[in-house]
Image 1 (cartoon, one colour):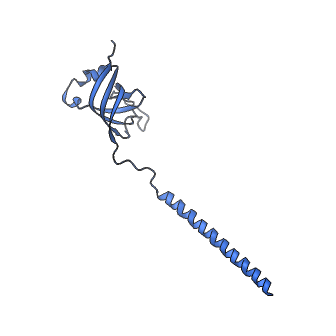
Image 2 (cartoon, rainbow, N blue to C red):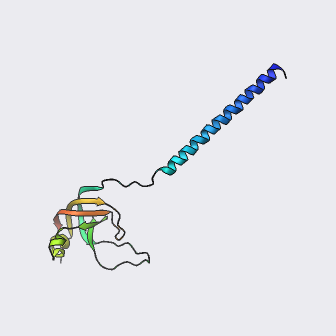
Image 3 (tube, rainbow, N blue to C red):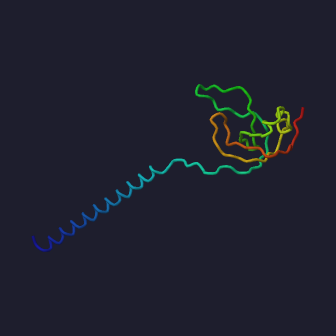
Length: 145
């Protein structure tokens, strides 16, 4: 082989080695990215999901989530439906102390404004976006008989 042939072969060998090294590096990078995506948690719940809120709407029966067999209980559990159409479980401290709590204006009014602590959470029983622990309420519109 002459000198020129050796030089051309060496250059081709170096080019091939460099090409393989480049491809190997790319494959390692892609593999690392795929593994890091697998290791990321799909859902991380927020640490603190409670906040003060004021909503306008009405007290009504909460929509239930069907059971595994598709059945839905027919009883009425009071909750709150906002004017945006979202349902919330309503935790009213008066229910613990007043046996006639359901006759208060909060439950008989057509439209009320409530103030309370909203805790965003999913319910297995009701189709709601969270739970509100009631601090106060104001009747905006009385129900007509």
